[in-house]
Image 1 (cartoon, rainbow, N blue to C red):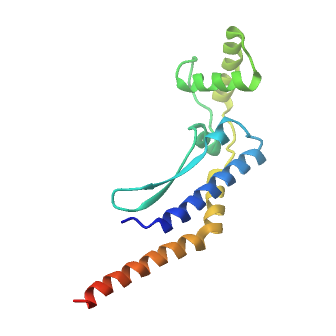
Image 2 (image 1 turned 180 degrees about the horizontal axis):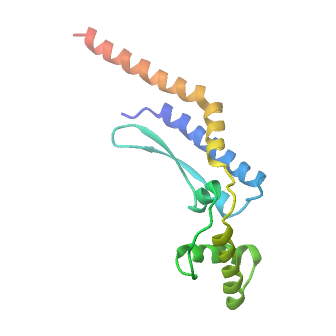
Image 3 (image 1 turned 90 degrees about the horizontal axis):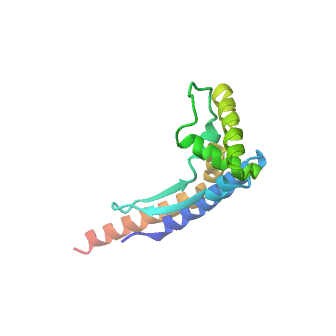
Length: 159
């Protein structure tokens, strides 16, 4: 039987982490938008009865967090260009296909030439959430451990 006390503590940690990430993006001028609305948390109970907290977001989040150096890519092929094109369309509200392609290619070429600085938000957000919720998680885990030891000792001494 899976104990839900740790699940609840991890759910609170997940919600707090998502909130911190969204705030950090807004504070850096990178939100609100599709990235911050894509950030989600979920507690997953694995087969071995271990609860795991999973934080997910658009793949762009890791790229924004880490930054990107110059590259030697040529042409406008690949999913990266397509994702950039979607972003340009959304941000600049360009509907003309030819204009959208040319503006996207100029931005694509500049990023490939210069890269862009990182805007770290993931690690700091996680650390702040863990520090805030550490006692709740520790208490839940400790109560589970004590209950398991009590149950094991109760079975042993009833024999």
